[in-house]
Length: 106
Image 1 (cartoon, helix red, strand yellow):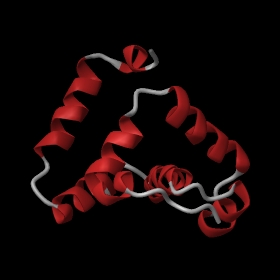
Image 2 (cartoon, rainbow, N blue to C red):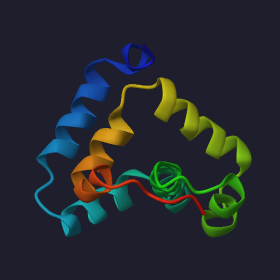
Image 3 (cartoon, rainbow, N blue to C red):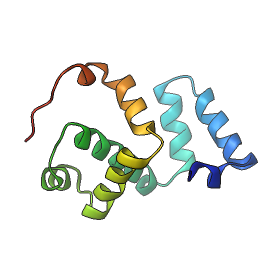
Image 4 (cartoon, helix red, strand yellow):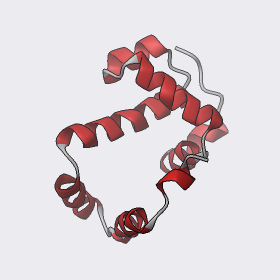
């Protein structure tokens, strides 16, 4: 598991800080101080790519709508297929109805 490679006191501290965030505005301020705009955009883009892959969108449509490279799309796909199921868990929280219906392809 890759997650074992990042475990440690510093990462624990970061995860605890994220878990302690109380609302969206506080999260925006925290991530604004913690990350560059580019880093935040990259994380956001990956999460949107995961969502679009879950919706069975094509690589071309994902690339056009998000600006993600095919390498990024492939990396996210690998995580969806062979990762820790974290993308799916969070997408289930944000979009619970998507698991109940068969979504059409593009």
